[in-house]
Image (tube, rainbow, N blue to C red; front, side):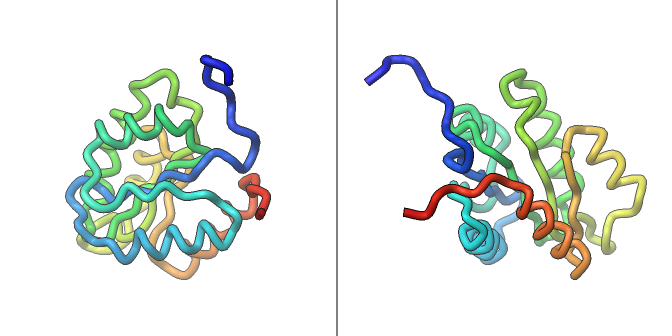
Length: 150
């Protein structure tokens, strides 16, 4: 066994799923995990209320194919901005795709300015909790390499 880390084969890299730091909801994370697994992904579900340091530590350890941040409590925009800013401070994580979705604002869906700000901060995609947002997320999943089912 080599003492040096090896790069995971396509499809072997997990998808990290995390709730925002202020979001204690779990069913959305369970749903995302099951959805991702049905689409051939290995998932590391970090659970709700994930501090940025934990997400960063796990992302560095797992070298994920994708990071998914989910919000149900409506504070996704603010939590998400802080999370992606901290994540992108690490050079090893700048190229890791990261997306955010769910209920991102307490007054309803984020507007174009907030979506643009989330993308400018480092998210590769922003999905709201509408049917269109779910469809867009599913289309994005279809582009990820799938792991071989054994």
